[in-house]
Length: 577
Ligand code: SRM
Ligand code: SF4
Image (cartoon, rainbow, N blue to C red; front, side, top):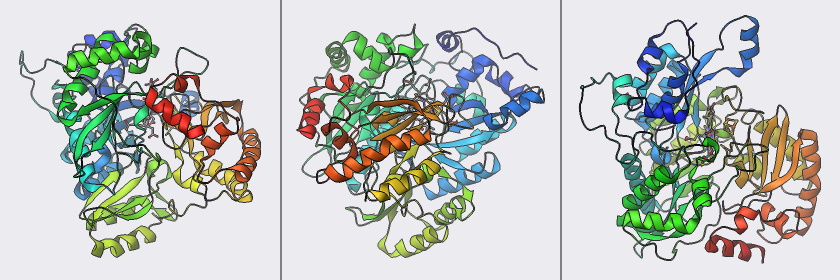
């Protein structure tokens, strides 16, 4: 078997990679193993793919003295999660031909394919690109897939927001031709120019970087969880006039390591729309130059801000952008969830939001979702939009077409999520976790249906079946389902054991706090039941579960939120007043 060992640091690997080429071609061509060489496992992320193995059969393979069942996850770069029906059909056929017969909508509005084997990786990449979708920079220490509010009601503003997000995504793409050479057989022209990386430099960013575009009153992208956020401010005509800029959000943490923590972004003020790309570039290059490249766990932008001070970073961004931030102007957020069912957009087209089970689209007994959406894509003339909450919009449907879409939705069980017995189950999110995620400590996506079912009788007993309580589950503290923004969250500690976190708001503006550590399901239910009883008895009108827990003194405002920007702080103070 080919050795995959390496002692290289990620910083070395990037610098010596010849602009992200490494020895990927050799690794792919090696027929003796289903894996890549270790350095190439790092580099392939920048091309939008992760090497994984099927953890369900890891022990069995070890017993049989076989190498792990290596396979690859591929993530698309689909800013705002917008795809045409034609593209949908191509992605669907890739899922069937090359992956595990499922499409996975992510918490950042991308698609993931799981279970692609090395031998077929290149053909899969080519098929994705043939759908006019790429995977470049979907992972790695670069700007990732840009999130955009899916808010269907404000169609015109959404179009502007989406266009701005798409150009930001393009602007921040790496310049290297490595992707096109390795996957699409573009010829390498020796010594050719054009590969300078003016934004990224030789070593790219110190860590992953994420951007979200939000449009009040809906914070469906959880903009404060992004390294860089743009909150749309509309002019009198309903067009985007500019943005409030937020910096320093991030969820990831490590159990037991207080140097790492989730952090919500600070709103540093308004910029006119024309300044968008200058400001985005200034923020990214500030993180490139000031971010911590020595300690990877402290390399995210949130730590750069905390290490240098918010005022210093803000001044540096202003200097680099040649712009001055004005006082924030954005309207308040009302919630960070999706609005399910049909709504009419301002342009007279209709949009249907379907609640998907953790974003997984597959054919299951009684729920042939993959087939159903393929049939819808065959007749639909609008677009598909993924939401940042792992859900799906069938968008831009003329009124006369609604019945046909409805019939297909019903006959393929695609309305099951919208008809969930509790509002909690409908809106809940879970990260992928087992069996594909190499970092998972506990189940998440596969556990969510059981946990929601276990909560159902408790919620019904206290008359809370319709209460829109926000539940999020992550299989480890990295926080891919943004659990620290859940009113209730389970964060995996070990198989069957979770940290129970409580008390975020439902606007994505306040983090939750640790309530009980490392407990199994029975204890979680026993902890929640009396809280449901108190909430049912004492809640104010329209008071969310998390806000209630705070008001009742059951949880406290996290210290990190207390120290955040004045604007959010005052919103918090108002919330609990
Ligand atoms: Fe994530 C790593 C899945 C959104 C924070 N994330 C991973 C990996 C690639 C595991 C790995 O490194 O080996 C997971 C692959 C699982 C699999 O089998 O597919 C993974 N992350 C996901 C997705 C698919 C979760 C989902 O259920 O939808 C999301 C893909 C988003 C996308 O399309 O780009 C996903 N990840 C997030 C989010 C949420 C967000 O961005 O809004 C976060 C928290 C926000 C943040 O970045 O702080 C997130 N993922 C992480 C981290 C912790 C980063 C940190 O700062 O510490 C890791 C681990 C790492 O980077 O070392 C990670
Ligand atoms: Fe994997 Fe942890 Fe992310 Fe879940 S939160 S997908 S377990 S890295």
